[in-house]
Image 1 (tube, rainbow, N blue to C red):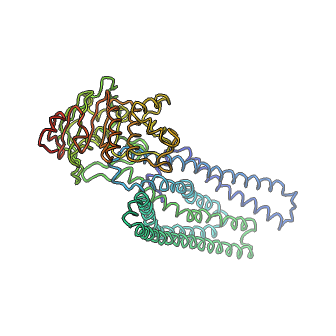
Image 2 (image 1 turned 45 degrees about the vertical axis):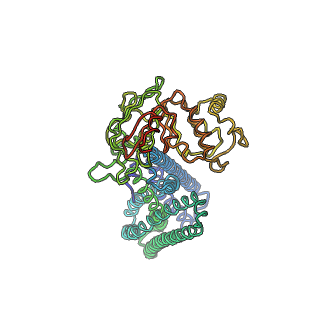
Image 3 (image 1 turned 180 degrees about the horizontal axis):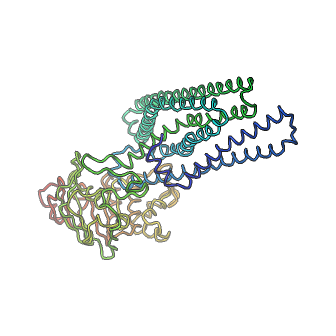
Length: 589
């Protein structure tokens, strides 16, 4: 089976594809020559009493043919593996680019464990499809035809036997393939489900233990594993049945050829060298078909993986809209665009340099999450002068985080416009615009590595001295000095666990090293106790100096030192004004 998307991907590496096909066909074409020389040697020895010295030239040719066949077979495999590697690399990059384009909000709709399986094991399965199955498929389609062209002129009966029996093998393979394909897709879905479920359980193990549910989850994992075992054994049974049938049919067919040749050889209807040549060629005639059957399971796995990969890269469009085109039909895999951005990137503008500050204007901005009403914006309008600091407060679901995510480019507005120094944000080059933003989220991610590695994510070109000075200015020096190995302390997965306050201080340092003119704070102190909140808040005040700031918070007191406060309720500004003025009102907060 050939998937059109995978074939299109293979076609992007025409050099390796054609080299693989030529190597396979060349190796197959040498088989008849090798068989004829061997038949001539056997005939000369047993019928004419030839010695080794008499057959020196024939032996030299035979060795040369064997060596050439081995070399072409090696080249075929080498080029096929390079083809598979390139396709895997492109697809893996395309999936990662798609994940980046979707952004963190839309990625929440996908199961993280399944995505991890897709990027790793899912694309890895395609290695066997391109490296083994695809080359074998073309050899199966062409080499038997070449053999028949050589056999029929020498013996029409042998050619007829091969011609009649050969189609039975792929016919049976197609019939059993429908059953195998269904079971393989089921196996793939169960594996992805098991991987995702196991990752979720491991991430929430502490909560499960606290609730006394860890044993119950173990039983569920065991049940899923048992389903996967049962389906996998079913797939293996089909594979073994297919292999057994192919071997049985091919062996019986070779036996029929051997009997027919033997009877006519005894009666003098065919000469020994021709009969022996045909007998040597018969197993080689069926070998490509048998080899294809052995790789058929790899094709089913590859097709199942490809279906999931391309459904993620090009999801079905909603009714009435234009579906995304697969690579090769108007777009290229690995050359995606930002989700929600206007078509094309040629018209993107460079963002403002930020030297004179960042001014922001929201005009009637609408954002609709479909059935999810929380966080939606209903014609939000406000302006922010360069260097001004505003706080966004209000109940959960009022739209505070949505404002920040719009500015970060994680989502796009459904209406209205957002102007950055007078330019629509959708017209700015996304990556260049994000370089002007420092962001401190509510739950910053601590990556596996040293404290230094985590800090320098914000500014990779910052010198060691500048990094230490910035940390001192932000009030982080004491926190880092208290770590066992200072800046070299390993944190994140496999390292030292950080408290919520320590992780927030690390995020503040990361944002400070970014040296960006726009600072976005998303509930940066929401989950901290009073002592840790005070330490983080002090670092944040230092970070805000000279920047345009938008800070989202639940409580008005958290942003009491801002220039202005906007109270968001149901996606609109319900109140606004200086902090002191709002604190004296009997409003929402």
